[in-house]
Length: 107
Picture 1 (cartoon, rainbow, N blue to C red):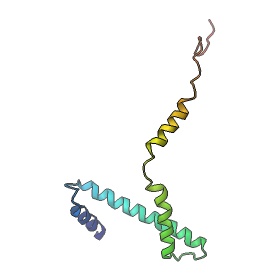
Picture 2 (picture 1 turned 120 degrees about the vertical axis):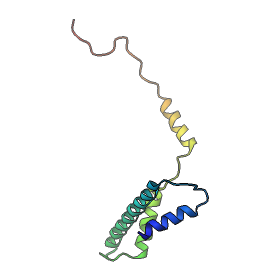
Picture 3 (picture 1 turned 90 degrees about the vertical axis):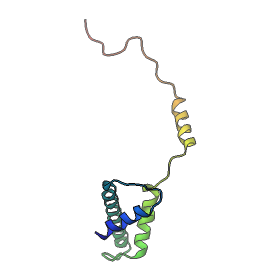
Picture 4 (picture 1 turned 30 degrees about the horizontal axis):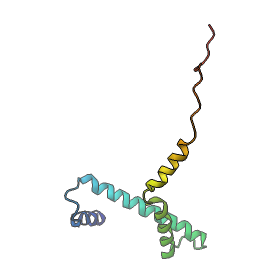
């Protein structure tokens, strides 16, 4: 398909990519198909909400992409934030282990 050819040319033109396995092309095709269909599905929901059932406009697609970028392609969580959460969690002492533990069975 033309999309596969475009992705293959894009991979070939990227100087940092020396070699790619054939499966990479299929994965990128799957990702692009899934992402596009989900964006268009979201845009259809936005169009229906705006009273234009069945008619997607460019603004609906832009809104769907912007909504996805926030949670789908989010950056890494800062190390300082993770360390502060760890410090809060580790500040709470663990309960002491009782002298007798486990299930008490009759003799």
